[in-house]
Length: 220
Image 1 (tube, rainbow, N blue to C red):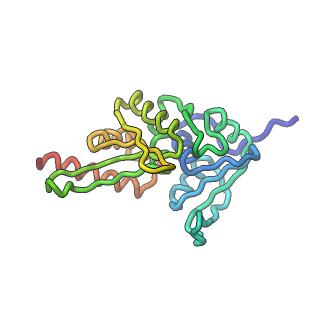
Image 2 (cartoon, rainbow, N blue to C red):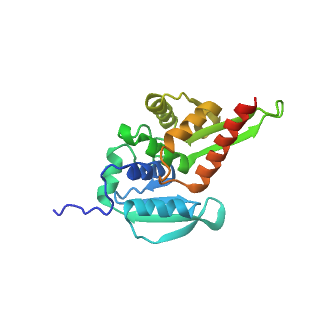
């Protein structure tokens, strides 16, 4: 029997770890053991994913849920070796509510986490109306799997020394949440160099919030 030929390189690099973070959040492994998909509202994110894996497949567009407008970019490809590699590290079909830990080498965890953030993470910030100079900043990682959020929370503590809190904000969603000072530390942790694969709009938004937080601290 011929050995299946892989299209994507499975050798660990910071870029691959980032791409796996995207797959864990916005990706899908089909049950046929071969095909994978990444869907995102951000064309930049899909292009970065394809570039990292060295793939030239066409980027399509699709609708999501009840919205018939094709507002999402869709990237699909077949690769038995890469599929098996993902399964071997804990990324499986029908992962949404069942995924737990992912076997990411310690040196690449921050890159994986940046991909996870670009996929399903968010930041939000505002001035507390009770105290004009009190600027609040929060960072969250989101999943439908509590096991996965428990793992993310523990890994961030073990590898960055930053303590988050797992919460259950809605019936189907779990999140790891970080307040201002820990969010600022995590910004430095995941954006540890200027030129890294990332979603530009999220990095700029996060950077602006961190800069405002530093300024507000000086004014207090």
